[in-house]
Image (cartoon, rainbow, N blue to C red; front, top):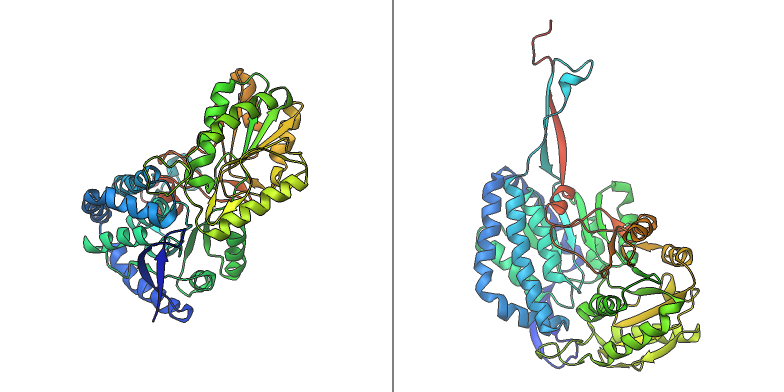
Length: 466
């Protein structure tokens, strides 16, 4: 048995430990989930929903302590961490409500020739055993979003939490087991990419719900191609925010800040490419310098911290290397140093980023770096935005709503926000990307639809023929 000690991103505090799973043991974990799944599926959906609600009630008194633990293990500022824990309870209860109204449809057999004497309807059924692979940046929210939807839909789940911050996820899983969800129905494996690959390829896995890098999504797709397993993928993004020449600059500055610093800039849907009309570029630089310099960098558990450490020192080193590469391609540092300090990376503003620079296309910076890319026209802004292989979310700022809507229709992304940051994800809204940003949609109700299937059932000649 191998034990992994979980430490804070700075490496200065021991927070807990998890037992690592040998890749050779993953198939046995999946086999037990397969064996347990049938009884869980046959449990009435209302009873499955009751257990989700019970888990939320059990966890409610622990919100503050779990928020502090999540901040400690992830580096996420404590206010954001506590909100994520509260969001996990909301996802439990929201999926319980959706599970209670999980229904099929009556089909229009009477209106079609050759079926007018039949009775036809559909019912929603589970996919089977779902592998849920989680990222480090929103581990609790995504654990509940995937697993609660899968469970209430009648699936069994084998979850792979992130190695960097698995502890609060583990407590949520324990709560589900404590209220009555069988342990084999909400199983867990802990390990690196080798364990993830073993899980994706294990006999008995029917679907894979993964949030992570595009490289990870492609690897899973390749590994499971011969089995044609259902893939539910939320992958990387290099979101574009288009600032047209008639935009409200007070609003732009506030929204760009809010949309970039969440989870210390480590969010797939952060506002990463700020494509601004050249006539506004310098004004936006001035406003963003003030915003960047006002940020408080410090320990995640401090109440006044707005930027905590990145998930580990290697992540901060990578961001510094990306900034250096952007500078070599013509970008200028207008605020911040562009240098890492252990796991810390202070917010940095890059101005005058050339449209041909890597970060203006596909180089996604996972850290608090603001990239301002000047353009000369709306058409050029669209060309730069759509040049990326990614297409998660995007936004457009303009005082002309008709113009903004036309631009929104032309943006190649999973969703568009007008006059607000594209880092926008209400739990009840569908969220997901196009191109290399993934397949499928997440959200309360939407994930449940993705992780169940619609089966038609037909009574031939149910009605007496004339």
